[in-house]
Image (tube, rainbow, N blue to C red):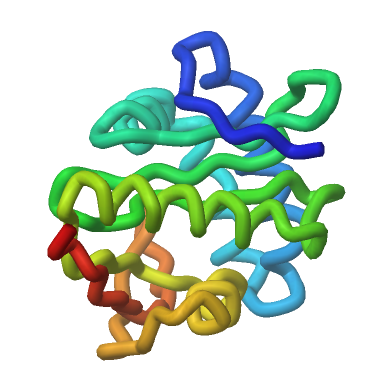
Length: 159
């Protein structure tokens, strides 16, 4: 059984390890070795990673033994800044549960539209959950070019 709870500062090193391991496990199927390395090393840039977790609201999925198996964060702008599932726990509904939790939170906070920058890995998950691609973009991470997509979902915040 997966439980989703708010991020705690004590989670940070475990989430950095989870992030790096997930990128190293799944990205090689879709990215070059240089892209994988640049992306994975974001977790080792402690200031950048800390900011990703603490700017806005981050939620952590934990398993029955209270170990993190995923995380997702949303900023006050409505931008989903992160959505990662442990490399050995993917395709078990954790990403969907985290995304649903973030959508519910964003709806309560009246963030609309809700949007993110989706990778080749996360784009299908976002689309299965009602997000639409609005544009493609190319960015640089530590001098390495990446293609990603802006995905968006308009929330009903009338209640």
